[in-house]
Length: 231
Image (tube, rainbow, N blue to C red):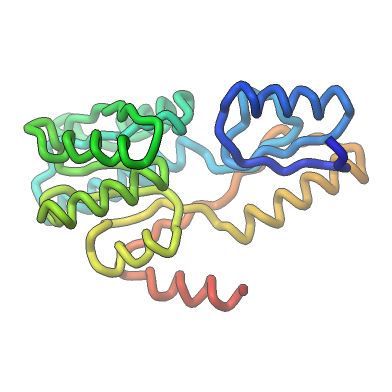
């Protein structure tokens, strides 16, 4: 691995873990983004799962002011970290009142097509929730297309993670209620600073938290303008 330092954002597969271990054997510092890969990397830059859960919880309470919310479900796919999901779930439970049920739905599938099929089956079933939380971009986009195609916009409110162009478009159209995203500018600068500390200064910082940004229809235009101004 010919590199002075590595910044990584990938799945938690054994192949990735082996490559991280190989880098460590060669004394190459590795900074992980979002996921800490079971503590294998020297530095971790991401968001607090607790804060994410609190943000989702507040959004559910906001929805409850105008809509009847009885059930909230977290969609979990293969790319979602079990530890992250558990932390978000525990944090959500601190916020939600007892009358709102919270559960998880594990979506099987090795590709986007099979994931979308399984999400559709769930959304059209009797177990479909009032609020669906999608922790991965793939699940978010699939769920959005399904609620639109099946005329379930408004019946099922979507809370998602990240802020891709398609997700921002969906928020503007009302198909996604909100995204709990991270400050990408801060993320990038923190990763570079971590590598600089490790390579040049010989320092080590186990965790750096990135601020969250809750994006709704009220501020999505402003968020887009901010992104365009940094390009």
